[in-house]
Amino acid sequence: MSSEAPARAIRHDEAAHRFEWTEDGHLCVLDYVLDGTVASFTHTGVPAAVGGRGIAADLARFGLDTARARGWRVRPVCSYVAAFVRRHPEYQDLVV
Image (tube, rainbow, N blue to C red; front, side):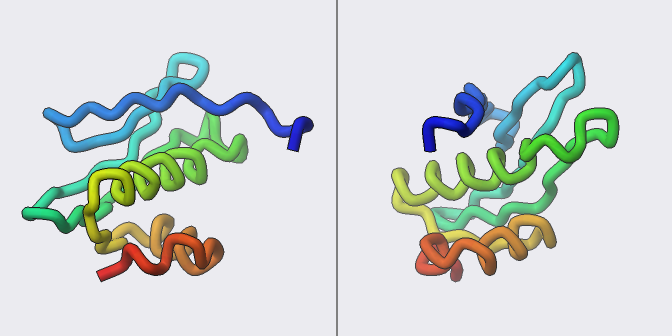
C-alpha cells in the first residue's frame, strides 16, 4: 500500500454537519443529518473540475470511520455513500 497517495486531511465541521476537503480551490463535501446516534449521509458533492481523484471515496470512508468511532449507525441516503457501502462490506454493519 505504499504506492497509495497520502491520506487527505479531511475536516469534520460538526456545526455544519459535514465532512469537507478543498482540492485545488474547490470545496468537496459529504453532508449528514444527525438524529440521536443515527447519521443520515445525505449528499456527496465533488465539483467536476476535481472529479475522478478519489475524493468522494475518501469523504465516504472518513465519514463512515467517524460514525464507527462515535458509535453512530448510518443511513446512506446519498446514492454515492450507499454504493460505497455495498462495495466495502466492512462498513455494512453500520447501516440502519
